[in-house]
Length: 169
Image 1 (spheres, rainbow, N blue to C red):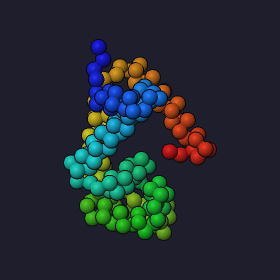
Image 2 (image 1 turned 180 degrees about the vertical axis):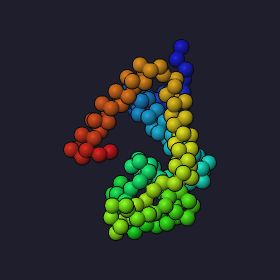
Image 3 (image 1 turned 90 degrees about the vertical axis):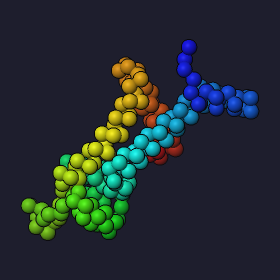
Image 4 (image 1 turned 120 degrees about the vertical axis):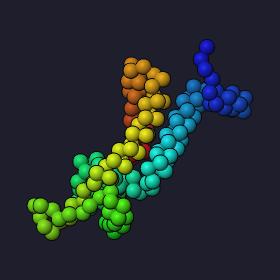
């Protein structure tokens, strides 16, 4: 017999109220929402554990994604923020020793932002914490099940992204 979760009770409560409710669709949607909330809480906990706020983590994350080196204008574009906002973030991260700004070797008029070892270590620790929780959750599935789940979720995302030609969720 399958194990029951909170969502099973939720669906049972709503079936008499909404006779047209598809319990499979409702169950899948509610479970995706609950898993998303769970992972968001895990991310928030990792930020607390590594003494980062969301803005600091996001900036370190974008910088790490560029190999640990980027121009402030690149970070501004990646974060979809005004340059002045990125400057404030970089000032705070530099004070904490997580990044350093240096002149570009190829163009002395340009500034380059580099992730320091402390910044990389802090970012990596937060990522490892969250990644561990993701693997714990998906570890209840075998490799083939994880692949099928990923493929099914991709099909759902394509439909969501295609809605009204928006292209973004």
